Length: 178
Image 1 (cartoon, one colour):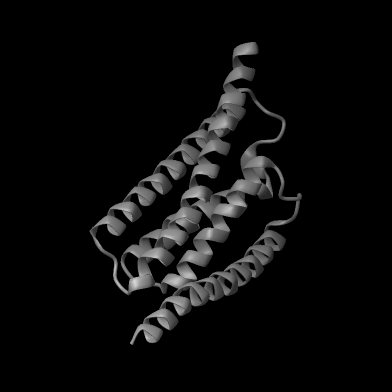
Image 2 (cartoon, one colour):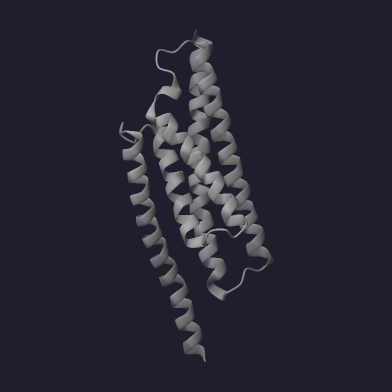
């Protein structure tokens, strides 16, 4: 039984580590994008940096998915009293994972605006981190969805104004030089 407990702790650690990597890469990606867009175009070094961040996001998501799958299988094999698929947090977690994957696909193919896509991705990674750490209160699926929509709106507004301030200060500097 001790080996199973160690396996569960390892899987929980991997799940949390994957969520942290994803959230950290999302933050770094937003900062890198703002810095890259200061001069109005993305050069070779900035593109390489953004690719590295993209690999971090993929690694975080892969680790998160594999650890989650391992936890579900372990719970099924051990005949856990509450199966993960019967909880609202599992379905919230699954929806957020699919949302991050779908939004990333849409952003890569320019099917969604960068401002909205990055706000959704950023909010989803934050929610995934909170869910993984057990910090999100036990709420229903619809309440979590409503909270997510409100947080996307807050992140959209905050990121919009941060970009506006960062890029606006660059525009002001270039106007003063002329």
